[in-house]
Length: 152
Image (cartoon, rainbow, N blue to C red; front, side, top):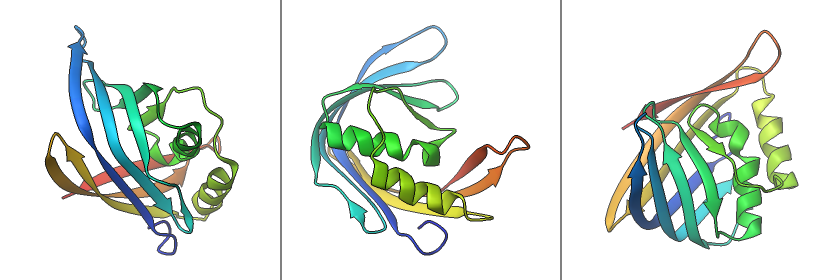
């Protein structure tokens, strides 16, 4: 929920394969996405399938690198990137979906903006619910800062 008025939901199901680990502790993964659904307010997109290559560094930061997900889905993921600052970076070449970008920017610009997200993650046949809260603030340079706090 963004600012207690815009619901946010993510559903992700797939199979995860660890590919490699480097000396700095960064793990490389490939996920076969069997079902990916995201909704933010009235914005939704059809279920998507494909694969994603990503890395997770020793501090827990995730970087999406390559994918066969549909272009529309990649544009939506790119549009939500400002909301995922600090734990998810999307290095996939895609233009952010305009309607999603506008809706999220409008909510992030609300003074003392807050977000809460919940979802279900299914990997390798195991399901796990997750919840997190975000506090949005502004740096002295005017840049938005999003701090996520994971809840169980």
